Image (cartoon, rainbow, N blue to C red):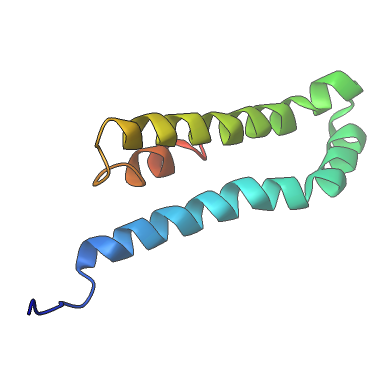
Length: 90
């Protein structure tokens, strides 16, 4: 019978990366309406220019899923959750 060890320190790296992704991407989505109006009022830009940050955030969010899926299909499961986590909020 194999002895099960508790989670290693690497598990906490994965937790921090996931939390950072959720904070950065979902935080922008959830506050998008308020930020959009603030951008329009404070920076005197058009609606199209004000929507760029939100469109880029949505694009990055969608690309993370395909990148994560491709990494896991090729067997890179150890570094798989960390790679998108480091580049996603940029």
